[in-house]
Image 1 (cartoon, rainbow, N blue to C red):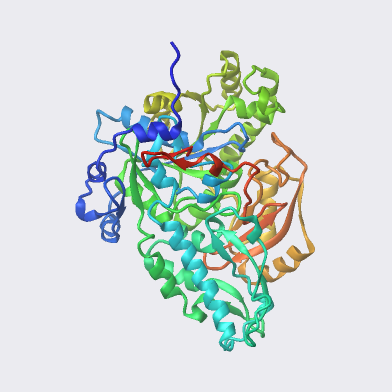
Image 2: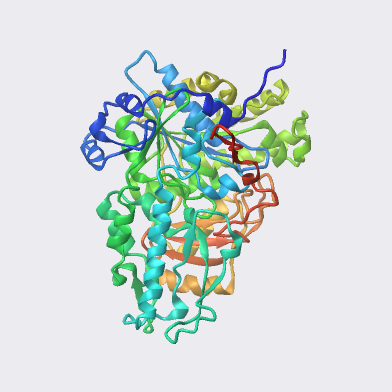
Length: 569
């Protein structure tokens, strides 16, 4: 008898959700700690977060992945499945686990990737709400960003008392949608008003904005307002920085973000608590959920499973070199997600042939996985477990080869079936995680470290990332990037760097699969994120405003006669 395979949204819509107060009570939270957004969503109040500060921290489990492919890897699905599995294993104890994730952006939801709430029987719910608008946090972030943009242009229009050099204004507008037509725009074109002026600018996607980065790195509302005030929007005619605080913008921007800054609580299909907050992309931004969410989760749960976007060369590197550097956080173990299919793709197999056994291509494609393992172990001093996200096309020979190759590097590879089975499909992974975390002592714990120190030049930091993490031979700067870097080195060389590059390759060329070496990292421009306190290096052809594909995911999305959303995945 054949069984109907339900889509992700059908599985999510069939679930019976528990009241959010019931979910929160597992962590000794009461109704006064919650700000309800309906029956199944709530924000944690500022008072709640404050009262937790003296609680001890739980263990932090970071989930990352190999370089993404069209075959899919399932990092978010594994993050959720592992948290559910940990709670199954811990069921007879007084300990518990929690998920701490980023919020999906509407860009991928309607674009190429689809939603970002997991898949199969490892999902966070309510799936439709989380993927579409959620609690309005991204709209608040976009509004705060665009308020500053409006204040800049209004100040210039009203007489420009700050003597802002129009050609120096770097602040861009943003929206949470893929819209390549807005990458470059001209303001006030053909406007007849005598006080108007033309200026070239453009839009970024909200998740690449500096306001999003500040939102996710701020530690309190006070710190949020200070960092927003430190945003540099351009220079005056004497070449001195003009900040958001010069425009008295930071107070109103913080007011727009006040409610959004409180982390949001939902649940998995199996009733595991999930905190979802913030959502910078990892290819063009720093790729981690908010600091306040992660730190709060660590106070509430014994084990917190969090993720860093895209491959470990992007999200995990930025998690460590930006988020951990700023907060003192340290992962206790790293889960590196891979699939047999994706590794065969890195070995040169076309997408149409990935379901066929190919041990030669698998072994070749494993170079990508092994490079990520090496980076995490040798350069960051982290303990690594590989999660093999199982597909029905995987053969015993392929799984055996993958596990035996990793054993040579003292790394365990655990087959996981959480997509099909939920938490029980990842119990072996949960047992191994607990085995590693609980048996690690001060004497046996690897020496966690950042990739580079603060006190070297920005160019040296980029070179270290390019050569050690990406396998590049060297870094080349465009003429424009050279001029920008010379200015930045004078004042901001102590900042970490955030590399914006393609997620599909270790290189800045998305077509180079596997683990290429000897390539050149081409940096075309730099952006100063003075409020977030890092420098963005934009490499290759990467865009801070993505475009939609030929057939966007939006074509499949609709609402049926019963009022239920269809087509989300």
